[in-house]
Amino acid sequence: MSKNGDDRTVSNNFGSTLKYWREKRGMSLQELFEKTGVSNGYISRLERGERKAPSVPISAKLADALGIPLSLLLDVSTSETPIDEAPLVAELILYHDCKKDTDNLLNKEEKESFIQIIEFILEMSWGEDNRIKQLFDLSELIDDFKEVSK
Image (cartoon, rainbow, N blue to C red; front, top):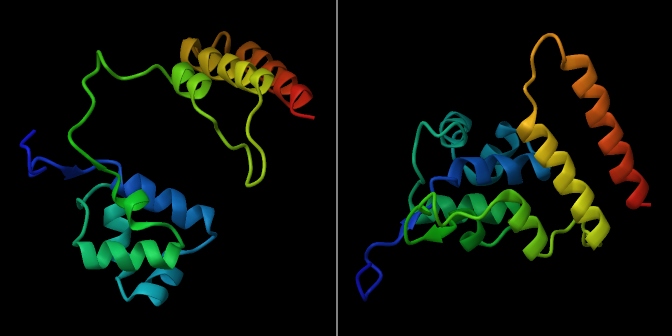
């Protein structure tokens, strides 16, 4: 990366981030259009990754309408993380505070239980012959998570 930061780019997750926050705010494409003046077709293409990040003024309108900081929407990064440097999902959960809702963080037991669910899903073979059993096993893990979350 150059010393003046010229190599910085907007994350490839712009569209996913935009869609996440729009849905989290309970907004339709039409509602976001009405608040920003950015066409719902263009917003849809951004969310599907058919378009890269828009200009800063348009990004600022979208962030403002969603009630989030522009930096969160842009997620400016220096580059994509090389695969050998990327953390495992379990590491992200274990080493960072994660909110389970607006007022509460996941505690140690909840994190461990949540990691079990994720690892189970990632390791599932998901064949026709064992799908029902795997769904049952997954539901048991979810029950365990709900129990430690009380």
